Length: 130
Ligand SMILES: [Zn+2]
Image: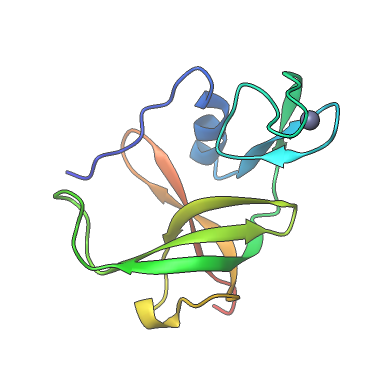
């Protein structure tokens, strides 16, 4: 069984949106910085005023690695883990799916997709050329 995230009070809006196949991130009301992973305050200006704002879900791979040894049972290896730069000015760590591991390279255009499990939905990314 693959270990899955447990939403907290802070992260629940992100997971609730993912369940609806929407990708959101926090945007500071004071300086408009987008930030992720979820924080209690804006990392740029420390404001605690923010909104959860939908992302286009489009971006490109900033960096990636291929995982050949599963961190625990329940992962199908090999798989690609990447930092994705979203076009709306933020980035996140996620799996890249829908391609051979060798196809995942720096600069590859990707779009969000969603992996539905019983308890939670995980955002992931796939090449846009498909
Ligand atoms: Zn700010």
